[in-house]
Image 1 (cartoon, rainbow, N blue to C red):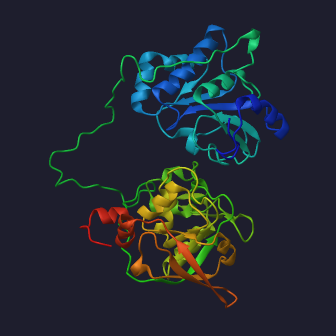
Image 2: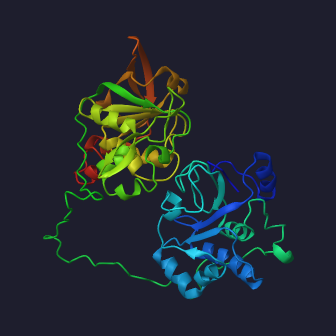
Length: 434
């Protein structure tokens, strides 16, 4: 069982009840959530359904709000055919459509009020604050699908299904499940529109007034010039996840197909190293809806009209999901580079794909030498080579300068992405040596 607020805080289920008491976590389990893109295969859901059937046989139902999200339409149709969907319904569970769902906050909770401390358990892959329901006080723990199901039936975080019994002395047995459905998968082509054989006359029509959809324009290629006197937009402190860089939730999910709109949330949850807390959002209309907008996004828009900007991050910058908006928004807003002590691997690659340079301090303590409001010059970009550091000079607000050595992990193909302006741009160019 891991959490709350990090997938790294782990302990055995045999140790969890005591940790709940020691840490004063809520004993009541308000919600149990299985599935989404992670832990939602046929085998995963059959293990969970096995536990549900055991409970049903003893006349028991889930005491917690219980939601199940299959990993694909194929899995959805197969568990509908094979009966697992009914097994979940029989104990009070609700099977949702195969989608991100509560994992990314697409879940309108009515059982709590905002600001209420409560505990949920999921089989999702992320549990950062506000991730699942927009409530920073929700303590999200992560376990296996069968563990989530067992604890939903018990309704409390202190239940250990390995050793404890339920009502009337009922003891759950460890579930088993086939890796694949014995009768094969139920294939569904619902929603599929076959592509026309001749696509020459096909156009994509998007209403220019649409508040939710916006046609993407290619990013501009690198102009061949070094980055000179580029302002530091913000220096983030501590954990800066993709949820901090590009928050989800009901305010922003409708804008996933509208890059300029969703970019207003860039770094909305990031901790400003100057104040050791997130910046106060700015209330304004975005695509016709009042939202709390990131001041860093507004500042980046101004810098974009001049010389762009640079973001400075701490350790493991970009930990979390693979959401590309966390890289696309900075790129759209004119961020030329992100310099961090270290990067989470997926986000680092996403930055490369969008033409943003992800750079790390050769000396991690150099993080302390740079601050919001400083200006940085990153030079020698014409000679950017795999495995070779580059040089930078920071012009401090005080008037002094600091020289830095920065590392990168770009290979030759990724350097081509940078020069082309993005990986997508590079795909449409003939290959040339870098």
